[in-house]
Each structure stands twice: as structure tokens, then as C-alpha cells.
Image (cartoon, rainbow, N blue to C red; front, side, top):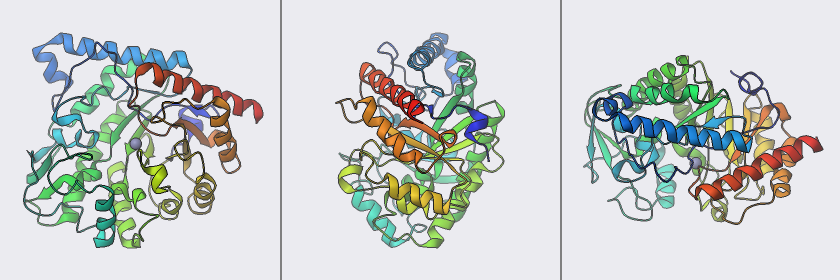
Length: 386
Ligand SMILES: [Zn+2]
């Protein structure tokens, strides 16, 4: 396991989830193209992309963040590939893309048990039918042949392009590939578990390459197929947790970087009372180094329960804490955000606690900067209080 003391070495280090508003002049979407493919046709695109990442790194440095993110500008803003969980899929070999759902069950359905499936679908009522608001699958995939890396190395190319743009540690975030199982119908392996492991193995190769390229921190979004979303509403059977943990461990096996999991609940998390207290009871064997949970959206009302369970069940892992909300346009005061840190410090040492946003930014750049300013000021208040 890699500790925060090794990767950043700053008590109450600061960062954000990953997605950051683009500079207004940067409007290129890579879709499933890799940087080298794009470069062969038009070199100005990589120049724009690089300048956009440099601009966002500079924003974060000036605001005083300790760990930077590339803003996920490799994700698309418009069109079919906009949704973050398909960014791995659109590059993999052996898969075919569909606009409407192909016949057959998705590979995750038989694995997560009927109770979980029902709960997941109650949260996302439109996800199993045709794409329709408010929750859209932009497309579906079928497994037509052996799952191969295809153009996944494109993601490593993005990291290699940007890693020299700052001397601060860079966190590379990407949706966990198993989450894509909700959009995937198998027509090749004839065994859902085997299909999911094939995904995990291919993804592992890409993550290994990313770490070998020097990426110190890799964040996987919504690992364990998003079970955190249903765990405190539905009894997730131990064998389902075990299966998902086995898949996760396959994904990160031998990856020489600090591995984070980002858990979040979206805009409705607060009103639905969702939190990670139950999840912490089940993830001790999962080989993640940092678990990131949100506290700002819920004003910390579940934090003590969550961290009590963390301490009892998986204290070896370190904690990432969301202390500003990316949804709420009324900025939190630094003192409010600092209170969340002080609560967490009752359970976690400052060296083992990293501060972040609840979620990636979907507000404009100026407001995002204000939020990060609040985050850094809150860290400063908490460091002085400690
Ligand atoms: Zn999120």
C-alpha cells in the first residue's frame, strides 16, 4: 500500500475530484481517438489540449492545491462520448457500440443479485431502457470478440503529454471499468463473470502502464460497480461484495501507484440520505489506498457514522474527504468546511486525511476557483487549529 505520507507528505493535503471547467476556447472532443492519432491529422489540437491543461494546472497551483488534476479534458464535453464511464470502453478492442440497448441482459445484472439490481434501477429508472432524461446511457456495448486493449493506451498517452507541466503530484482519474458492466451485453464469453474479469485484466494493463509512466496517484471512480450507492438501502450479499472486490483487485494488481476510489452520490445523495457507512464494513480486502467520501453535500451529517465504521473495519486505508460541494452555487464559508475537517480529525490523523471536493465540477470556472479557494482556506484553518 502507498501512503499519503509517501505521495504528498503534507498533512491535510488538498486536491479536487478531477473534472474541472474547460477554458472557453478549448472545445475539441477526442471521442475514441488517441493523442497520437489526432496528431497525425492536425497538430494544433494537441497544442490546444496541452495549453488547456497547463492553464488548469496553473489555476490549481495559484489556488494552493497540493495534488493537481488534468481537469479530465480527455473526456468529451459534447456528443455521444460525453459520459465519463465509457471513456475506457470506447477505446477497447472486441466491443461494438450501440445507440439503443441491444437484446440481452447486461453483464452486471446476473452478478449483483436481483435485490441490488432492483435498487440500482430504482435510482436510475431510465438506465435499463432506451436513453432518456434525466439519466442517459449515451450508448451500449456488446462483446463481439475477445476483449483486448485496443486503443486504451491512448489514456497513458494523455498522462505522458501532461506529466511535465507541473512539479506537483498529479492525480489521474478515470471511471472504474467494471461500472461499464451496466452498459455491456456479452455475446462472446457466455459467462458474465468471465467477461468482467476480461475487462479487469485489460484495464489492469493500462493502469500498470500509467503507473510505470510515473503517475503517482490513480483515482478510480465508482469502483465495485457502484455498490456504495445501494449498500445502505439494500442488503448487499457478502458474495457480491467479494466478487466486486476480487474484480477490483485484479484491476489494480501490481499497479505501482497510490490507488484511490472516489465514491459519490450525485445531486440526490443528500435528499436520499445516501452515505458510505455501510460500505466501509465490507471493503477491508479491497486493495485501494485511499477512499474518498463526500461530506459537504450532506453537511457532514453521516461523517461520524462513516468514519466510525472505517476505523473499525478498514483503518489501513486512508481517507479523502469532500469538504466543498460542486453543486451548491452558494459558496460554503471556509469556517464551515473547516468544521467538517475537525470532525474527521477526531477519527483520522492529519497525515492520513486528504481534502477534496465532493464531486467533479459542473459549475463555471470562476465559481470552481472560489470553491477551491474555500477548500484551501479551510485546510489552513484546520492546520492552525490542530
Ligand atoms: Zn463523482
